[in-house]
Image (cartoon, helix red, strand yellow):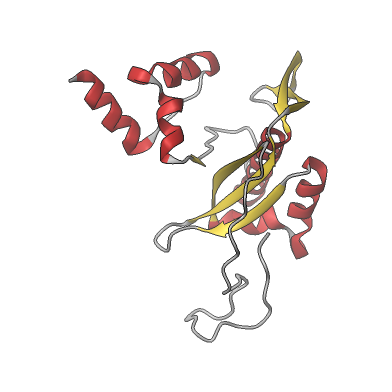
Length: 189
């Protein structure tokens, strides 16, 4: 969770800043828990936090997750949303179609961490829809997750087989960035 400050930043050239100037200590991932890191454009992060942190507090209470907003690298227009929660499959989520309607009886088992990740992403979509004046399900929906380098190889799989199966099964466009392109080139050689 971000600490807010009402004091103007004397070093800032554009007036006051709501971001804390004191970095947060690292948020540990206890045994049996998982951490997801999701990118969110800085222009939308205020809607995810909410006035006095109400939105993010409600997300934390409804999912039993720890959710914290972290700074991204200086040259990035994004902020990182860190979600840490229990990894055991304990809940269920109903799937929705592109119109936001429930898809019949299609329900999937999820962990508290997955539930929190989906709810945070839904919140980002709602903030985007409000700010852009579009419906939540209009156009292409993009979710950008950050992964540890050691995890990327497992998601991509040998020769890209795992990520290709995920693409085929879900109908999603998935990009692993530069690491995926490097792996595909080395597999072709």
